[in-house]
Amino acid sequence: MTQDRPLRADAARNRAKILEAADAQIVAHGPEVPMEAIAAAAGVAVGTLYRHFPTKQALVAAVIESHLEYMAVEIEAALARVEAGERAADVLFEIAGRVLESAASDKTVKAAASAIGAEYDPGDSFDRMTVASARIVKAAVDDGDLRPDLTVDDLFLVFNTLPTELPADARRRWLTLMLDGFCTGRR
Amino acid sequence: MTQDRPLRADAARNRAKILEAADAQIVAHGPEVPMEAIAAAAGVAVGTLYRHFPTKQALVAAVIESHLEYMAVEIEAALARVEAGERAADVLFEIAGRVLESAASDKTVKAAASAIGAEYDPGDSFDRMTVASARIVKAAVDDGDLRPDLTVDDLFLVFNTLPTELPADARRRWLTLMLDGFCTGRR
DNA sequence: CTTGAAGCTGAATGTTAATTCATATTGAGC
DNA sequence: GCTCAATATGAATTAACATTCAGCTTCAAG
Image (cartoon, protein in one colour):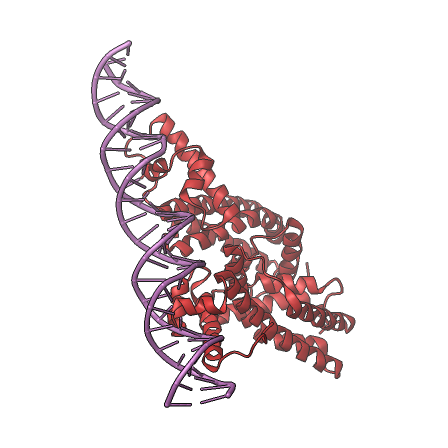
């Protein structure tokens, strides 16, 4: 899909700048940032956005995909550690903070997408993320560290729930409360 | 503020219809519903919206205020029950579900407001709500039912966090996880 | 039943933002 | 360094909205 013909050097550079700028702008100003603003932030003209992405929706979808990809990689790495013998709950909690940031941005972007009406394709990364997460949660439950009725869906519910806007320390506090609700108390 | 001169009967009726329609439309379709849509839902012409509210922001602010008012009343009633001897944690949890609904809508509407750039005045209702909530939380903590480090801010953090969109059962599940995180386990 | 103020209507105005496209640039194979 | 297909540019087009206002309608006081 990316390789019909290799991209010209400057085009590839611009594409990257556009994705980066779009991410930053959308996370910072929400759904309604003008394409002009994204273009300006990327240092290109609007027309260039449309050379790379047919519509604003498509651009937003691409940004989402990059977030999902990041999270998938992160979580698969965590799963590897669990399978290598680390305690699942420990790994999960350690990851949480880092993934949280991306999840937060991702949520903003998803909201942006649906506000615009994009029915974007969940795609490969999402499945990878789900599968890996499910295994980690299962392991932690089996260890007796997480309440036995807990599932990946709960985890996702909570991650999708998380507040986008507010301060880092509030976010940390929130995470603590959440995770405490997940634990058996035995840990 | 409401009583410069009593409103003509039909005007009062329209104002109520407008507020109701605005609430429904904003909660259902989000910030960006056109004034035209609100007008149509209320069965009046756009001009009428502007007779009652100078700008869209003002209309949105009025809707927020009505939600806050509802919650303030609800929570003050809860406080009365606590002061009458009911166990604070019980009352709090019983209320939670009901207040949750309004909080969810309110969040949507607030988001709408800030998306439009309304710096609306938190106002009286908000303070009443805060004060009453703080007392209930304090009582529950003193009873030993809620973890001792818990404050109203935590409660609000959680209520502001709550997902607007999703299904009633998911919301219930979420609430359970949250509240479990709040408890001492003693209860 | 009159009448004037209070209300209502909806087309017109002004603004903002997505998307297009004719024109101008530029990378890379030769 | 030449050439042209790939790219980039940004003014123009089009669509949605918020908001205004001149003219019409309806309460309600007398």
